[in-house]
Image (cartoon, rainbow, N blue to C red; front, side):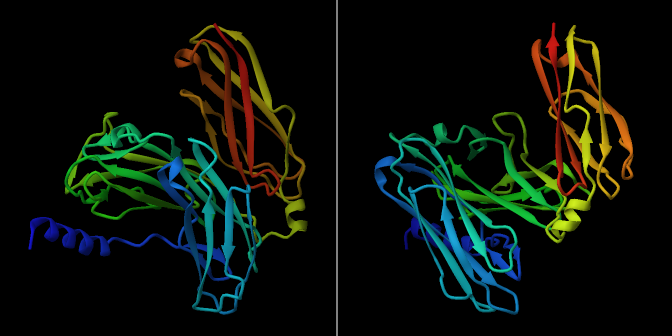
Length: 365
């Protein structure tokens, strides 16, 4: 038997041992194998591409897929019409026409399910190309032979009690299969590559799932260090880790409409603080004032900002009817000159305003 045959058998055996993707729980006992399908890089002239999402009923009563709505006519959908009985599975299948031009595409499917309050959003992603490109051109950030489009990835928004999954395509730049493992994984993050090992000069899907934690609110980074054939590698950007960020907010899905209406409700005097003209290096103290017009105490779980050097004063819990002021301090010494806009994001317990964006604007000389 030839050496290449031995390698092919070994690759198949090891790939079969790769961890399965995390199942996302949707409510009523339903689980789905993924919420994102990434087709990766495809050629415009290669024709339509298709994928399937699988729903499994882990509950004790039948579940029904009422309807699936596509964002545009370029994506056709089919789904299981009969009830999905306990222990059984149903599917949502989608076909993207791949005739919109040589561009990245990101298509949504909105799935309406029985006993699930919020519709499920499924995503079809990929990049359609007019001409073929090398792996090095498509995946410019490399960790040794492992390559990826970028080292910092977005997982998106999730609610407490839930999880969020995403997937990206990675490549093997070498002429031998590579085995990928991850170490130093941040708690709450699961990350896998399939197929694994990645074939020589081939691609694979890297899927990652972030689980919500009440110890983490707002925007948080999750990290994992890839090892290639047992060895860690520094990326072409000088980092040995892959970073994934997710934004966690409160879950109000169990609240009735009446309870949501009666919940905490901050009303801000102004959402933008204008500091006029300042010289680079000066400190800006922006003050924001709000009143809790709800019937329950209002609290801020976390404050985030896109500024590089900043801090904020304590924001106390506000009982109904109470007025509260707090300050955000900006150090402009490392901020660029010219027009400036800083976004301050509050993650709160308000059912009507779980996320509050405030703005600090002006001109830095």
